[in-house]
Length: 298
Image (cartoon, rainbow, N blue to C red; front, top):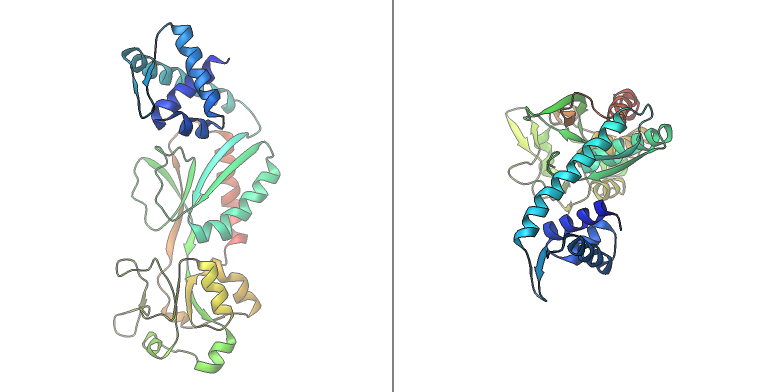
């Protein structure tokens, strides 16, 4: 059996706390994971793990071997990255994190065209509004909306993230077109469930700010669901422009209160500082920067 694979299995067992979880992480059976550990212990002539039906713990030899094995695998990984840097063609797996709406509407299609150009690259695109830790979670590139406060990361401005207030023509025909945020009191509004008193949208009103209606007739935790409800005439919708761009272009949704939408927020690319970033990363960044103007409404 491959000794490096055995080391990797041993480290996974220790970090996950069980053979089953380690096997799932490494995409092998728990029986195979046990065989790797047994072979290591046989080769070393000592037990690395003390285990019973309920728990497992490291022996003294296991603690020493764990630290040294991690160091060995880190050196192997560094060697592989060094070789990859020498390759003219980008290759390998690229892990990307992006906000749900922007990632689904903009980043995913751009990723598809990138993969057509560089078939040796594999992309793991994680769409989440959670603030991922690039270092701890092994993420190569993140797209963030809002101001950036990370001195240890490289940040590249992409575009403004605009919001739009819109409704279906049928709804406006029944209820009229609002002229100022104060008119919202007489309208049916749709809202996202993540909007709270802390992060809800505020519209610039004639006299100070006006909050987007809290007493929405429909709340949903998915922007696509809200978009479809607005298309069906359920009410006024406040959503990112990229999410409803097709509906606005086709006339299925119509802009309203254009002078009172929230201020756009900046969108940035973030990646870890590296004097010699891998080709798969540099090419993906270049592709996003070049293709973005056609993907995001002007």
